Image (tube, rainbow, N blue to C red; front, side, top):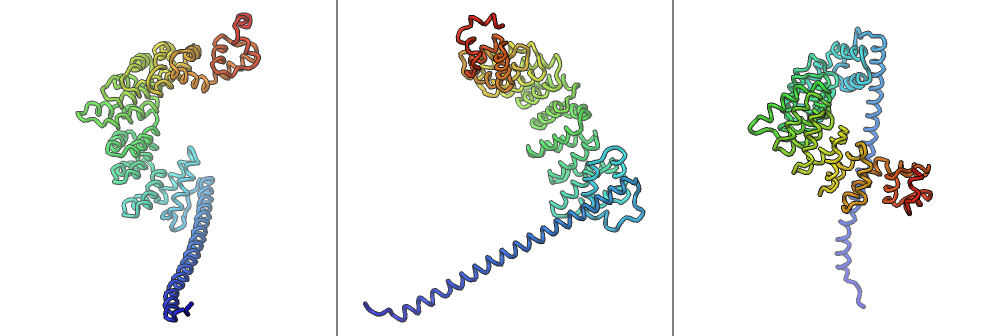
Length: 407
């Protein structure tokens, strides 16, 4: 074989040098990035420790002032403008009740903390910093700052509007209920649900203004369908007893979302007229209405509804069958109805019945009574279908000749 061409060797060496150089540069860059990351993490950890120590000092100082009920004659400069101090005040306030919480409110006003927060909220800070100021402001705001909170309901940021609604809810500001619902009309479903959560925080006092808003809205030529449904659910969650007539009328509306919400709410605030309306709703053409009506009848323990609920065990929709079975199981004689469904011709009805019998503990109770030698006829039928009989109960299933003597 011939000797290698020296020119080829020089060419290969020339081509290899840049590759080696780039490899070295890449390794050094990776090492530098790793060192930088470690340094940044260390700095961040030290910063967090510094924040924690500073917060601890603030909380200790606030605790001393609360225990002595004394406002500082010469507060340290910068307290009123330090976000950590604001956070310490908010967290400390949440742990107090009565006069001690009132002292924190006095301290906040004395130091002018809320004015500082209002000023920061009005400035074009980055969204996260502004939102942090709003969150603290909401936790510390007093009735004197209700107008500022109402103004934030119109903020372009839905997150800030939600925080403002929570603050107004904490202060039980009734005139703000309608504006909160108006804001929910233009919000996304998630944000609207959070605004509704703020309304639930009002408690029962939200009932009258929410009912008034609903009545105005449903008469509108183009009503806000989703928001009305949210408001209806709020009435149920706060258990407003005066809402029954309004909810019954909404249950008969032509809007499926409203009927579903009304059927749900009536399970918490319903009376005699609610029971009649819910039984009628069991035949609604919209299956979620049937499902919610069945669940509400179970919550209200309407004993007369068993016969109307039984056909729903054969409903084509799974949720309707399950809710009907659960409701039947809550009513007097319901266990026997569900056990009979186990031997019916509809396997889906039997599945729903067995699932609820298991969840509600009927199977366990039947097995317990069987072990003690005192099973009822319903227990025997149930355990036979479960196929999990204790040994001492098996003769009762194989041949029921001795059943009467056992019972």
